[in-house]
Image (tube, rainbow, N blue to C red; front, side, top):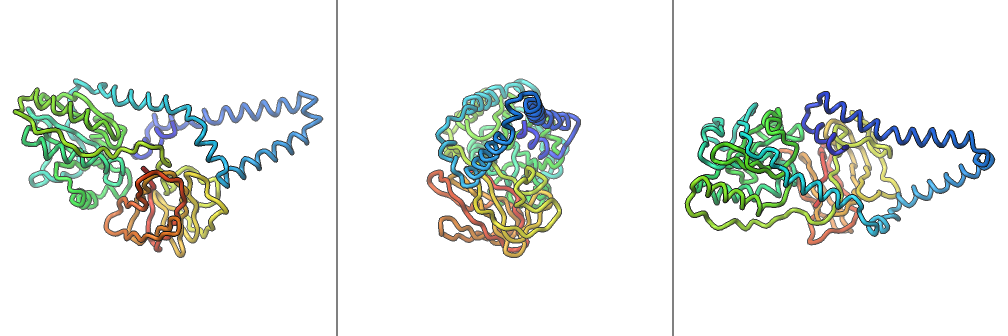
Length: 402
């Protein structure tokens, strides 16, 4: 539920439904805690044996809590955590498989026209593209945003399909629906479309109008529209590229395309191993800080690294300012990240990043529009800690991993 709330927040459309969902999450999390507190208080008052041993129980409980805190702080539970099976994995895989397979909720529905588009890229004279004008062709509608690592891994497949099948009647329409404020700038999107080599039409959907018309909730997402304008299938997230291409080829054949070129062979870069979850840095998207190691929203604070950084978390050192979607580095700003992944990526603005990983230093020069930079890349997943030194003024938005 918390992930759903985060997605709703990213759409910048906080309506009654989002408020109800957030309230339900708060109530659901609070009721068990309240019940435990009331039950503990009632037991303490009513059970004589507990009253007579209350001091001993408090001391024992305190020692246990301190032991758990110490084990967590020094990452002593990591081995146990990896050894214990993930009891939610099967349920999650089942849900995700169901999501992809049941994308036929849209099947045979008329594809919505692009609506509320701020600007058009890669169309003659920047003129709008309509699905009605592409009647008789197969259309692949993709939703993406340029700083999303998942979208960037999917882009080569969309581009390859467009170049391979456009002469056979395929149209690819990329709907760029932003996550961060800087992705609302058409000039930033245009610069990245060119830098990434995207040559099919791109619609800038700053107000989420087309996103909402499709009922979309994912970056990336793709919708296959047949020659008559009906949505015949969709896929949410990365992967299943061979299946999507097979369906795409079938729709082209049904539309009367001649002999098709051989299927494409772009490698599937979808991560196969579990990694540290996406980690937002700015107070607009990040969870509340309970460690005191981050500046409060809208404030500047000088911080110090703690003795240890827990797995899948980060800590700050030096001067930092928290505002909106980012943390801005000040004098002597450093960030320490404890991660599990093959690669570490950071969405950042302009400045210089010095990465210290196991004693090896790498310099990353960030320039131009805010975008995603790869800080660490290796052949296999690793559990390690990196320290990042940032030049003053650099804005850091979001870590992603694979």
